[in-house]
Length: 331
Image 1: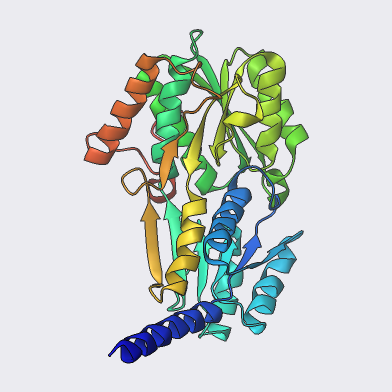
Image 2: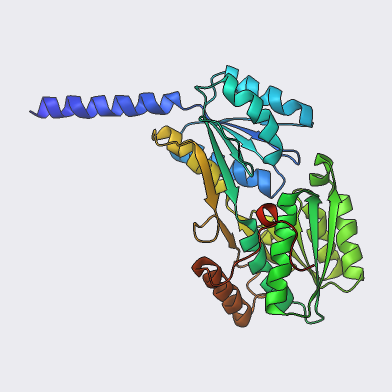
């Protein structure tokens, strides 16, 4: 009996090892680069966590131009990588072409919906988290002026901006919100000089807090806040540590968790296609409070942010979704 039990355990272990060996994960990053301290780096962090916990390594590629997207996805699929994560909405058209060509390869895309049986689409309710940091920004600005700097001017980034304005107005109806977008091409994600200039112009107009949703461009926003002795708000990853005392908080978009789950569900043979929507209720969106910004967030501010989050989750506050509902009701 003991020999039979040991043989069964060995068979299970071998089967598990074989399953793990069949998983060959890969990530194709968006413009802005793997180490953007924000969106792409969050995905990288999730992939690294998976590697560290399972011992299964992943392949990765950083596109330099839009024209490389299709080629990068095809190259990984041809080499047997599976699953493959495409980071960002700008991969949607490329994945529409590539996914049907490799029907046995599992793909995931973040921030877009691609409807194929071998694609998992992961989207977030960024407007919910932006509402929360808007509350905090308005409460941290006694002069009543705050700002927003977006990256590429697309509906997704307008969703961030709208949620932020609504949250700021919720906390302080008379608040003034300055808004600028960096550009209309992918280069808008990787221009910290321009980001710093836009933020400086808002600070010069009286803004006391500026929130960015701009990838690497946002690093210039946070630097400008520190240089001006004002406050910035980070995005996607926790950016509080970049300029301690000058980053009020960061709106967390848990792309790290999403990336980890894509790889781990494939490892466990539990991967599913379709659309996953992650917001406050699902733990996919939040805001950061740590040793780098705890002195900036008063108990009243934290209570207001927590209450707003509770109300959003409970459906007592419905945050307008620019992507699905059109123009923001307030400016």
